[in-house]
Each structure stands twice: as C-alpha cells, then as structure tokens.
Amino acid sequence: MNVTELKNTFSERFGKEGVVYASPGRINLIGEHTDYNGGFVFPGAIDKGIYAVIRLNGTDRVRTYSIDKEEYCEFGLKEEDLPESHWAKYLFGVCREIIKRGYAIGGFDTVFYGDVPIGAGVSSSAALESTFAYALNDLFHLGIDKFELARIGQATEHHYVGVNCGIMDQFASLFGKEGHLIRLNCATMEYEYFPFRPKGYRVVLLDTLVKHELASSAYNKRRASCENACAHIAQRHPEVKYLSDATMAMLDEVKAEIPAEDYMRAEYVIGEKQRVLDVCDALQRNDYETVGKCMYGTHYGMSKLYEVSCEELDFLNDIAKQCGVTGSRVMGGGFGGCTINLVKDECYDAFITTAVKEFNAKFGHEPKIYNFVISDGARKL
Ligand code: GLA
Image (tube, rainbow, N blue to C red):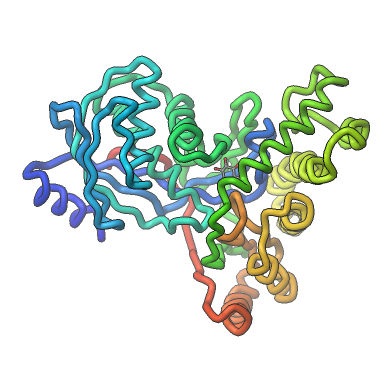
C-alpha cells in the first residue's frame, strides 16, 4: 500500500477525493514509564506511521474503512454511539474528546492504513489518534494547539481504550522533527530538541513479536503502584507532586509503609530520571559509551524492578551484550515488543545474524528487524 493506492481506495469507496494526513510512530532512546510520573522522556518520531484520507460528509456520522483490518465501520458522534470494533474506538474516542472540550465537529468519511507495526512498542495507537486529532483540528478549523491534541489522544486511551498511559507517545507523534530526539519534561511540558545522528553507530529495533494480552492491566497496575508510593512520600514531603520529584532517601522513609512491589517500582522510576539526564549530557559530548551504559541500566531496571520485560526481551538483551552492542534495552511499555539497540557500524552485521539465529533456535521464530529514520511529526500531505 502507498498513498496513491490509499487515495484510490478512498475514491472507489466514497466516490470523491479527500485530503491525506499522516502521523508517525515513535522510538524512545531512554526514559521509560517516567511520563506519568512527571519525569523526562527522550523520544523521536519515525518514518513509519498511519496515513488517512479524510473528507467531511456533511452528516453527523463517521464512515470509516481500515485497509489493514479490511473492515468497515460507521458510527455517530454521541457518547452512546461507541462502536464495537476495537480499532474504531480510537477514532470515536478522538472525536468524543474533541467534542467534550466544547468544539463542534461533524461527520466525515475516511480510509486509512499503517506501516507502523502494531503491538511492537512503537506507538501505532498514538499514531492513529494523532492522525485524526491533527486532521480534524485542521479540517474543522478548531485552532487547538498541539499540546491539547496530544492530550486528546491520551484521553482517548484513558476513556475509550482503558490504558492509563502518559503523554509521551502522542507528544512524540505530534512534535517529531527530522533528525532530532525530543527531551520532554512531563511535569512542566517543557521540551528541547537534540540533534541525533550518531556517527559510526546504527540504531535498530528487534521485535520479539511477543504480545501479552494483559499488558494494559499490568501497565495500569504499575502506574497505581507509583501513585501509591508518591502519595506516601507526599505526606511527609508536600513539595513532591510526582514520583520523579522524590529522592531515594525519601522513598526509603516510606519503605515500611508500602508494599515491597511498590517500592521496587518507585526505585526504578527514581533511577530512570537521572539516566535520561545523563544520556542527554553524554550525547552533547558524543559519548555513546555512556549512552549505551544507561540503556543497559534501564533494561535491568525494567526487567528486575519494574518487571515489564519478558524472557524473549531479556534474551535479546543478553545477546546484545555478548555481541558487544553499545546499548540495548526493552523499549516502550514492555510486556513484549521491541528492544532498541545502539550498535557500532562494525558490529551491526554480526549482531543481527547472531540475534536472529539464536532467537530462532530458542523460540522457534525469528525476531523482526526494523530500521528507521527519525522524522517529522503529524502533517498534511
Ligand atoms: C506506553 C505509554 C507511554 C509510556 C510508555 C512507557 O508507550 O503509552 O505513555 O508510559 O509506555 O514509557
């Protein structure tokens, strides 16, 4: 599928032409499960995303066809019109969140497809939400700023999908900039672009193709643990608004009051905050060894303290270490999906060959390899 075929599919189905919008998935170099804790994240948009043709239809109904699912769905714009199909809930949620904020929108026809892998931890769902939030804002001349568009996508996850996610994915999908990563302070929403073209290195994703069914409830549970630890700390230290504001000493003060599990989750989050800052500093010195060490540190924390890794991801991480890969870790929410790897040019081929062979020997299927380019965020094509 490409954009020309997409447009043709739209015209065949709806008889007219529409406007094309696109929004990307994202990678995140470091700063995982920190967004909903008021910490830092360091994502970048990628050259894989969701593409949609849209045309206003003058009714109060949305008519939509998903090329990837080969499914048609039609729904109204009132809260009780919630569609059954999972994928259509994302579109419906975006519409509802816009309406709930007091904006007037009407019906539209749309056909869309994606080249961003689903369930791999590269935010295909944020790409979908951002595409439609961005497009509807443009087509109905709503004048919503990009921060609020990101919040509309995030609220869609909270209220229509059931994942209490942070803001990173939608933010990256909307604010992405070619050749740059974005360090976002999720407490203040201040952000800074960092050029990212590591000379002599490649960054590659290895997808385990593992998808855990309970990933969203496990994600919500992690978030609840963090909020509990934070609430206990805040009782003694009212200046602590988010868990990322806390120090390890503060966490230790409440150790006896909170479940051991919550303590471990919080320990990871507090450590991760510093790692993001260390990576940003190291990048400015072109010190990729430090970047890589922090990535391994994150993997360890996500695996042993936050417990969002799995056997397949840990296996890929071990192989990366054995092959002398500079940095490697599980990326995104976890519970399956990808590792992100910072690999010296001269190590690349041997690493990929070994990882594919050994992973296949152990798990009976090959991991998928994704190369990507850091690209621009949401746009009209
Ligand atoms: C998912 C969520 C994000 C973030 C990451 C983990 O991608 O959507 O908000 O919490 O997990 O860093």
